Image (tube, rainbow, N blue to C red; front, side):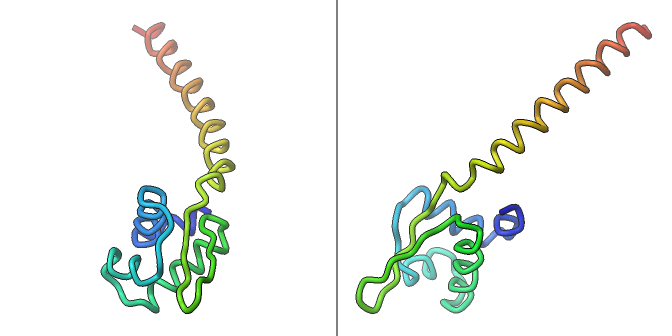
Length: 99
């Protein structure tokens, strides 16, 4: 998931789908400002990370964000956020004792 969102174009596509809802590859190509094959490759990476889903409607493929897929990353960040807050609190206490 981190690798999928590390690329700024993929991150922008995911954010666009999150904000605007379901969109076609054509609309995402126009938004991203890159070629349709490039957008398709980015969407494949996002699909593998389970960050987007797609559905076919005739000749068009529609994509939508799956923001719930971010839950493991949010949990991981919360865990390490608490860890570092505790460490910084202990460092602050130590520095105050040293003064």
